[in-house]
Amino acid sequence: YVNDSVKWLVLGSLIEAGRRLGQWLIDRWRIQYCITLEFNEGNPSYEWVVNILTQEQVWRRSREFRVSPPSSKLKWGIKSGADPHTRGNAVYVPTYDLPQLFRWNGYFMEVKRDKGFQTFTPHGASKSNATLYISIYTLDMSVMEAFVEEARRRYVDTNRPNVIIHLADTPNFGPDFIWSNSKCKVKRPLDSIILDEGVIDSILGDAREFISSEDWYVSAGIPHRRGYLLYGPPGTGKTSTIYALAGELGFEIYSLSLAAGFVDDSFLQRAASSMPKGSILLIEDIDCCFSREEDEDQIMMPVPGMPYMATPFGPGRKKSSVTLSGLLNVIDGVGSDDGRLFFATTNYVDRLDAALLRPGRIDKKIEYHLATKLQASMLFTRFFPSERFNAEKLVASLSDLAQTFADAIPEHEFSTAELQGYLLTYKKQPEEAVNRIQAWIEDERTIRRDKEDREEKRKEKAREKKEKRNQQLGPVMPATRE
Ligand SMILES: Nc1ncnc2c1ncn2[C@@H]1O[C@H](COP(=O)(O)OP(=O)(O)OP(=O)(O)O)[C@@H](O)[C@H]1O
Image 1 (tube, rainbow, N blue to C red):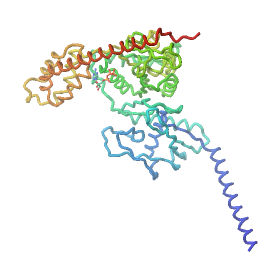
Image 2 (cartoon, rainbow, N blue to C red; image 1 turned 180 degrees about the horizontal axis):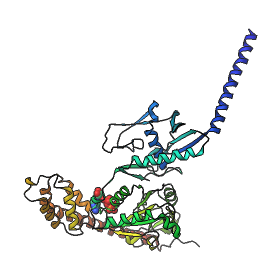
Image 3 (cartoon, rainbow, N blue to C red; image 1 turned 90 degrees about the horizontal axis):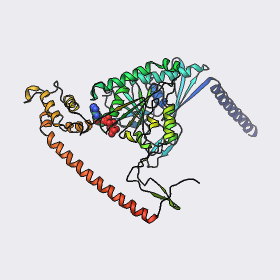
Image 4 (cartoon, helix red, strand yellow; image 1 turned 90 degrees about the vertical axis):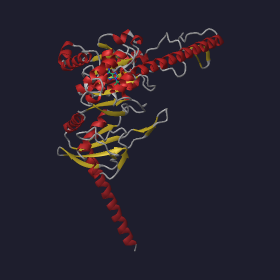
């Protein structure tokens, strides 16, 4: 009995030792003959690899799926030959928690996904940043590059009918987790943007000329970058112009707003440096990082523990955490040798610093205006094209209606977005839209007057509060260093 036990013990030990040796050999073999690539969610390359895995149908043998509504951020839903009109009730996202083996170009590869850790933003939202690991069984390093390049190329091809807009709209807690949200928009035709004649063509021509003259920039020793500032009142088509241009040029947009509290110098720097070639950096509300000394509502807030020191920004004041030097550093660095485009938008051009506006940073400034009569007429015609409306049923012709509509619209008083909003309420009744326009204008004017009165009262109250507080505090010393 003892002999038998010893025999089994020795045999068991031998089997375990053999198993460990086998595992060790497999691990050694993997380390020697396998290249592993890591793709982090929030980095553009994650989207590329997801797209190629979807096209290669790597998920065919997957048995675990996460079900998402189709309206959610569809990183995995971007299918080959993406049809923007396809509608399903749900999207099935393979989880890849177990390694999946597949072949690409004759090479064996393995994909595994790590769910990542849950991060919580100061606003309470949670997000996990997943990581994909792709192991390629080869000694040839060039396969790695070929795979990533192919993934990128296919991603661009897949989304050719669309414009991809990456948004940095969540505070990030990791170095690679910046572009947290991607939207896939159907390309907007340039002629659907109603602007003064030649405006769009001049920007497009300028951008094309810039893209095609990389060699010239290099030989002249000039950084290959081009900056555009689109400024003017809200709702006049600045953002729409950039989206339409990106579609025309086949560029992806990387968009962030300086008004977002979590965007600071370091975030901006990382965001700009994680953009690939052939993309546009779009900074909205660029005026946010310039303080306004003339702001009447500034409330001097006492610094805790130092009653005679004060900071100029009261609670709730929207001031970006990005500094001017941080912003300029990013603009100077954006694609200095990569031919990337930089677009900025603002509603307050007079608040911008001259350092930002100098050529080399902003090369072209385009002003947007509130709608003219001509724009109103063109908008009307776009809303009510003659092919869609049976002219016989209308008392007046569509062109006459467009003219009457335009005549009623005062020049430079309403934005194109406001007119669009009005026309949307009558999208099937062109005559009704014309008949009611005067009443709408009167209503809008009353609403604006009321708003202005309220704003005036609010400012008055803030001024009184400020004076009262200053009297209580005594003289306010500026916060200076000895
Ligand atoms: N000139 C225009 N031509 C066509 N559509 C326009 C125009 N201006 C505004 N619109 C429409 O109004 C809406 C808002 O436009 P958009 O976001 O481009 O304005 P914006 O100038 O960027 O505003 P903001 O300064 O508030 O960001 C969009 O749906 C767009 O289609």
